[in-house]
Image (cartoon, rainbow, N blue to C red; front, side, top):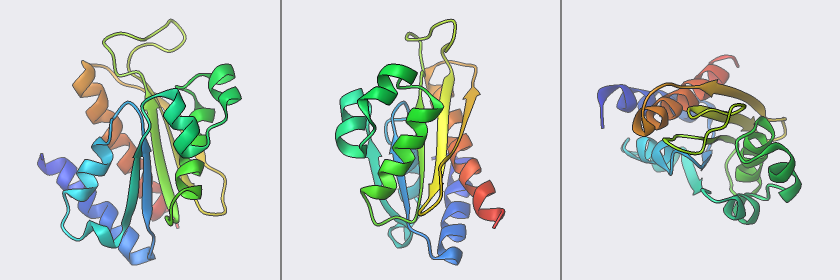
Length: 163
């Protein structure tokens, strides 16, 4: 694990511990990489409750409760799906805060409207609506996925620091 990811994990852990928050993750294109980064930090069980890897549309629906209509109308890679994933992670865990990632890491799967590197994120606290955003990253599959992990964790830290 590289030093930047270790530092992000430790910063997220510190912020969650200070606020007494349990975190849940819902990941698609990153395949559990965020959870791996988090659990690299010793003691992360104090603040990391669980991670969902919902790569298929069916998994998003079955495990997180993402409505079929959202995926059919907006796509698996959309702000709406990312928000529903984060909200579903909260509903299906004991966590008080969640983040989600869904995207097109490549090298195939892109379209003119959603090119390879398009990743949607959401962050959600219990009792509050999810905040979603889209980023487009350049690079190969591994580079896109790593950038998504970093973006998700930095986004979480920004939201926690804004309190």
